[in-house]
Image (cartoon, rainbow, N blue to C red; front, side, top):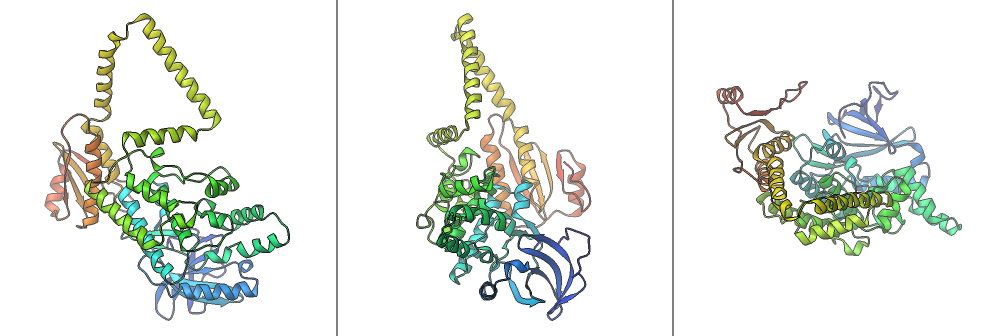
Length: 466
């Protein structure tokens, strides 16, 4: 859980004790209950304590089943899973004590555009490995989404809320409704939209209230990876009902319709994760993690293959097919205006005399759009988002990046950004980079006092210098 309190209003439980846990403050509140920052009086450590709403556990059989599942989830241990420490009751309310995770949710990182491709792949690898461990112990998460994954301050992903998602599973009540002759699809949609609130990340079998196994989590992870890579949720529509219909029945869009330069292998991995039928997806999370690690190696080394011209054309055709009627009207209008302009020019000026100015104009456009200064600005903008980067300076196309510590993963990320910028360079010499973590104070002062400083990381409470 994010340890930064979201409110200063004191809650009645703040300062009181639930079992062995002293409640210190409120961390947040959602559909699954209130989360508190607490202190474990027995083991003397900070924890997060979640109190579940009574209406979710009012039925005795449901309460018993949930307690068994939550205690089973507490036996799952993995670096990518927030550990469940304890499950108990206080005055009829069930509470869960779990690891207090300090960091930011993937949802917040996507919203602030702080994830690059390697960062997204790293998170997906760690989540897949955590899911693999849970699945091998017979535990399915059922609610994998960016808001349920936190990236810690040292850059590692942690999955939250294992053992909780099944509590809100509408399957049993839906089956009862079916026996009574009620419209099952409508009831399922209403319950999911009202209780869980995240249909865009659910699998088709969850939407249809069918049997759910570990492969459902892989579909949800695929949706999350798609969003991390492109900034868009593939099946999200204007209403929950439209979103659930898209998840269950509509084709998965290609990532290249959103971001044309992403690796082809990423599209292949996502396409398999997001298959409608569970049997068409990866058989388990271990195999998915292996393919993601291979994709990361190829991306880091620059061997990841961009889409070919044929694939780009195919994606463009797909994008045209997905246009709404109003968008088609704008497209037809734009094409008509272009055709009219060409006709007017051709009627007064010979086409041959337009060839040379057109070529010069194209070269000038490419020069101004993709010259080295613009690529440097792009590099600085992307690398400055990496928390470990302290200073970025450049002289004579040689970039110096000062980082906190020498981490191979960090070096790969910076070099990947450099390679991406150099590939786009149309005119001028390519950029090079030197990554330094061992500068003395005198060397750092000399670097900061010289020309070409493009970014200096701000101290707490200050704005970064760019």
